[in-house]
Image (tube, rainbow, N blue to C red; front, side, top):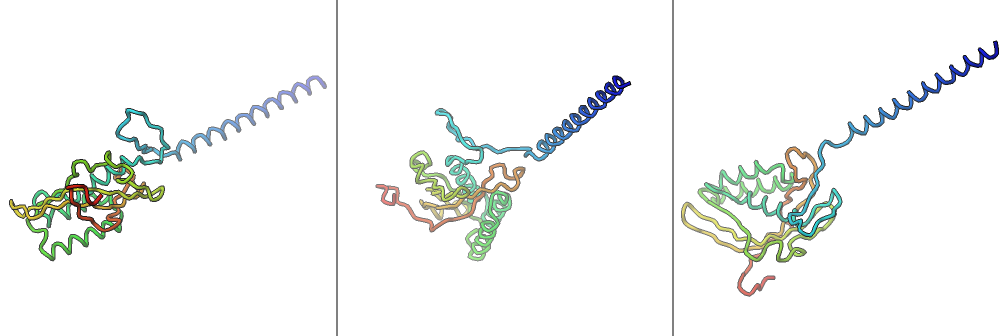
Length: 214
């Protein structure tokens, strides 16, 4: 009788062990499922454009080359008025709103209104482009200065051409100091994770001959 009771007790103990192991497996699976569900669906990794020498970076780090190219692209698009500035400028602000900070968007909209009141936009065609020899590759540490982990100051040396109908009314060479900030809010609308935060200082007129203003 005792041998039978011992056998039954051993079987019960074994069943209890299996039940405990099953509960443990269920808990581990639940933890894995929670980790999988809480993980981000996408992860943006900024890679510098020139990989000839290789690159090792933290996933959250943004190379200065990428910051410069982003600043140049957004600024060019804001200042590209192919038909008439009164409509093209507002369209550019609207189409780029996901790449602008709210304060910068409001500042640009106010700039549009004040220019329109002064009659500076009607039938104005405008475009800006990089000055040859004044790009990122020439002075990288001067072109992009990281002020914090989440913000950068970018110096854009650009030509600006402006026409009224077919007549050129303006050609200027200037340095535009702009601010770029980290903006990981909506990757579906802004995959760069960066935003244009307007100017960080006064625009400087440049003279190309002799590089006097460098």
